Structure formats: structure tokens, C-alpha cells
Image (tube, rainbow over all chains, first blue to last red; front, side):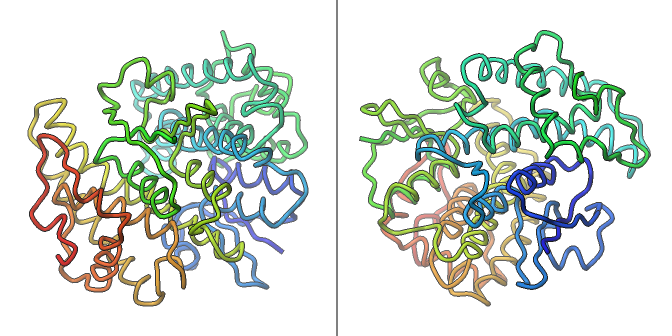
Length: 223
Length: 223
């Protein structure tokens, strides 16, 4: 069986878990905190990052969330997530990269550093200026999701795609860390409620990261 | 005809130019400096980043270097760059992401900021500590390329692939900015000389960025 190395607040692990679940790929989770990982994990991934997917029977290791998603897209027919014409697929990949790279750099990464890593690793309080900047940039990204969901059925077009799961994965981590304020973003909020209520999303919302409680609304699919 | 918006020291534009050239996709170059770009460029790409590929007849815009490369991989049969089995393709995408993300973050981005953007935009001298850190991290990445090229014909395996072009694109920008020291990296250096001597690479090496002269060895395919 596939094994997925992850930790609960890794947005890229969440993206892969959502894709595997949607595509019906059964897998076991192995918890690893990259900042505490030992030699065994670095032997799997010299870059020392989650997610890593490993198949012991085939001795096959897959690394990088997008490479992992492309692999299962090519090998599992069920629930295509990078679908449509070549131009449509390019739009799905553009938006997936936008959330994986820019939303992550602007919002998720600073929140993870200030509210998770400083607490668990450095034993320091968060920097309130950095948190304010991340939340301001989150509003800009939510404005863009408002525009997308006002003009399209799903983020990349008429069909649910990997772009929706990549975006929801980033937002769910930011929301866990208290960085998402939906006021003024009704369209984006409606889209996210639909994402939250999918069966693939439920296990993620039920998980807690030790020492870091989520806000009360986090796991409520109606909130 | 396809139009590629780029600037000479954008490593992601270089990756796309190399892929288009290898695949025989004719295209026109349009120079754009993202930090000076006007409304017309932001209308094409709201994220304001290069590269952007545009096809006026089809009114088709492609954004994000990997989404662009995947599009041409799917639509142009000549010279496949993401090739082989699903596992082999995952390895090509893993290494492409490693250079696009980690080499870029560790080496190319700080060099571009210190030696290009500070000179052209902020009129400040580079920070020598930041340059030393980037060059130290470059050595670690070159160690990894040594290991790959000692154990494989090309970076991702037996075949030349997008991983080689993504890596060479990053290295070529770092080398232009004086950040690459090949001492102790004979295997990586031999591989890079082979990349440099490909016809697709020549136009890149001939280009200069105004106000920033490259070191003498930069365009010499034997150096």
C-alpha cells in the first residue's frame, strides 16, 4: 500500500491527501515533522520536505506535491483532476502553481512560521507585524477567488479540478492558524464551504496539531 | 506566432525558451521588466511575473513556466522532455521542481536581488553576507549535481529531460551574476559544458542585461 509522509499542517501534504482520496487511492499516513526528522526520512527525500509518497512493494518514492499529483493523474483514471483541453489543463496548472507558490509564500508560510514553528521549535511569540501582513495579503488572494468564483463554476473553469484542492489546502492551513477572515468575501466563502463538505476533506478537518488548537469555526462545514 | 514575454536574467523564462527551442516551437521575444511593467502586462498576467506565453490568433495566454512546459509537452510531439514511464516522469518533475524552487530560493533569487535588482532598481550595493550564503548553498546544489551525473547519464536518468534544462537555466543566471564556482565539481561542470554547447543555449549566452556585464567565462562553452 502507498505510504504518505506528512504532518497535519503541511499544506502540500493536504493537497496530496485530497487528490489521493478523490481518486480512491488507499494509503497509510506516517507522521513526520521535517524539523525533527531522522536519517530514515532524509534517505527517502534528501530535501527533507513533506509530502513524500512511498510504495514499499515497488520501492518507488515520489517527491514534490505536483509531481505526485501528476503521477496519480497519469496512472489512475478515476476522478481526473487535471482535465479538459490542453489549454484548460494549462489553466488548472497555472492556478495550482499560484496557490502552491504565491498564496503559500504570502500567507501560509508566514503563518506557519509565526504561529507554529516559533511556538513548537523556537519557543518565541509571533511577530504581530508579520501576522498583519499575511492577513492583508490573504484578503488580496480571497479577492481573486471571489472574482474567479463569480465568473466560473469552479476556480479553473466548469469542472472541479486540482486548482480547487490546491487552493483549499492552503486556505485550510491558514484558517487553522487563524489567518482567514471571510468578511467581504461571500463568493469565496461559499466555494470554500462546498470544498469543506466533501468527504475527502473531513479527515483533514478532524485532525489537530499537538499544542496548537484551531479556532472554533475551523472544522464546522457551515461556518 | 507565439510571443514570449521575458527578461534576459529570468531563469524561468530561460527554462521555457530552452524547451521551446528544443521542441522547434517558433516564437517571438518581447522584453518586459516586471518591476517596470505597465497595465498591458498585468492584464496578461495579474501576478505580474515572467514568463508569459501568448498566442494572439487563439487569444491564448499561458502562465507559469511548468504549466507552459507541460502544455507544449502535450501539444508538440518533437523532442519529448517529460518522457519515459510514469515513475520516470515523476523523477523528471521532482528534479525540475527542486531547481525551480530550492535552487532558485537558495541561490538564484538572492543573487538576482543583490546584484541585479539592488543595482537597477534600488541603487544600493549588494550585501556581501547574503552573497556568501548564496554561493555556499550553490556548492551544496552542485554537490548534488555531481552525485546525479556520477550515477546517471543525465540528471533524471538515461535521457536528456526538462530537469536538465531547468537546472541549466538556474545555473546560467547564477553564473552570469558571478555566483558559480566550479572548483571541486568536475562532474557537474562537464555536464554544464555539454548543456551550454547545445544550439538552444547559444542565444541565451549571447544576450546581455543592460548595466550588468557577465564575467568573461560566462558565454565560453569551453570554460
